[in-house]
Amino acid sequence: MTVDALRLPAPAPAALRLGPPAVLSREPIDPATALGQLFAPEPPRAARELSPAAAALGVLAPALGLLPARERLRADTLALWCRALFATAREGDRVERRIERLHRSAYLVARARAGEPVASPFAHRLGEESARRELPRPALDALLGEARRAVRQPLASTPADWEVRTRAIAAAVAEAVLGAPPTPSTVDAAAGVLRLACVLAVPAGLGERRFHLPVELPPTAGGTPPDGELLRAVADECEAIHQLLLRGARGVGEVPLTFRAALAALLALALRLLGRVEERPERLLRQPIRLGRLESAWVLWRIRREPIA
Image (cartoon, rainbow, N blue to C red; front, side, top):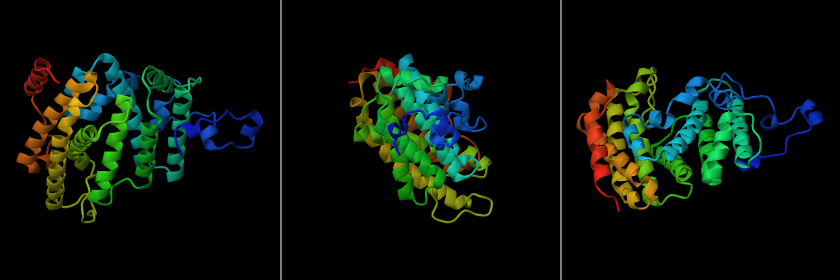
């Protein structure tokens, strides 16, 4: 099912009384859920004040400062939707209910993209952004599909499955941000950054007894593999990320000029952080790995100062 396939006519009152498909219901999405809060007629105050893109990037967030304000708003809008989509996989109700919420959110997005009235400030914001520069339907469909897959199978079963999943999400996000299909090098860069963000989130995940990188051995009763398996998984992931970031450097010259400085900064910060993880991966099991504020500022200053072809 695609985003636009859900843009169906509103049912007549009689049809509503007969019990319409859930995706056509005029009832709001359950407000106790991530998608319900995002698409609420009056979203929570915090959702309007945070920078979700910065939260998603974490220590890589300074690179966003090299984007124009309008592009930062687009990144924030997409990050909000992605965060709610993939939070749905972790919610505790039945799979069918969570899939239903995904489809109902897609219905609201499709209506907003078509310029139809939607009683959701967030959906209206998505529609406005798509009118400014197209939010490509294939990218939105791909994100919806990956969210459905995460609901049905929250963890990647093998390293190959993990690579496929992360690359699909990275490609969809890159296409949605740019408004056009990204080049393979740009997808490499996006996939490397996404996978590095997952590695950097390992300490927080372990604090919640979760480990989302693929591990060949089954998890222990506590929910995480032994330390030796964790470190091997991190080392394997770092090697793959290194190759992605190096191949992704070519993408700096392939994205529109508006995005080149920010992508260059993102890759420069990512390579520095990756080096820290590779030097002492055991630290990652105990505490987050960060860059100093001055070090990040120096990277941004250098990129602002040096012209990017």
